[in-house]
Image 1 (tube, rainbow, N blue to C red):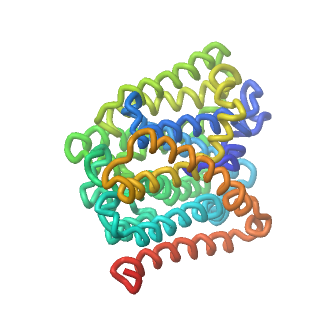
Image 2 (tube, helix red, strand yellow):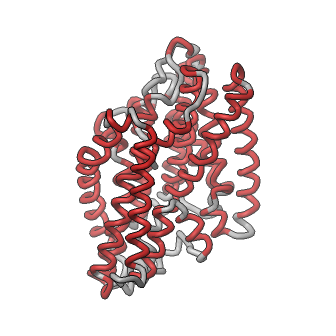
Length: 404
């Protein structure tokens, strides 16, 4: 959910080193694919009946993140001969934390203000503040797995911060994977791409085998665990190591891959199912990979995905993902005492999309493109830590504290 256009511009090797000469430095179609992913998730949360599997948008996001982050790391290694972890985490801090922590804090304050109405919508203020602590630390997935949350049980009062589980999985990936790439680059500098390919492929296979096993043993942990989700990010990483060869594909092969991938994602969203992230997750995940590889050929579905309005939604997809869910849950308790009707959820979705655009231009973009912060990685990291600490402290204070 959090990989951005800045990363997309650095997601692949420059044209001179790309077989077939395809310019992969910026992939507008991937920005468009992010729009497809977030729209599926938002419509699923809105309760649209013909998209019972819209949650697969998260699986698509994982593939995109694995692809973009690995491409960024490989490109940096190619240009500089090494990977800077400080630079990586500084960029992530500027991109992810301002909007993320703002939503956490706003949710805490709203839950406190309307606590008398929250018999539905997070259960109660205390429940919301507990969830907020873990969301602020990007450990929401572990928290929801520990308390036995069933993501698919719409009959229970969900947490307004439930959607932070997927952000936590991505952040946990960001903690581990760049360090692995750094070490591999130091040990095998001249063979970094094939080495990363082997490492990503091995991790992907191991994680997928574990996911298939775990969904039948403990479905809750299988859904939320970073170990069972790693293969979805890993397969995106594999794609990042081989995408430079996409220029060798016959143009009609790329055309077929792109459209087949979109159809696969759409079918998975329409028919839904369980067994996630096991065998049923293969369809949307491989579909996303097909779109990524096929789009690098320069024709096909990429033209639709790169259409300006589609890309515009993709550009604000992170903010929209953050913003759309809490109002659906909090307003459900305030106004209805139960789930909101579908049409009201759709209205909330449109309203939060407008807010996401505003947040992008007022908060996200200025911070991400700040020359001052870009020139001072450790300042960016310190800013991020301060934001995380603020959200955590506010959650702690409102949880049976002086504001309780």
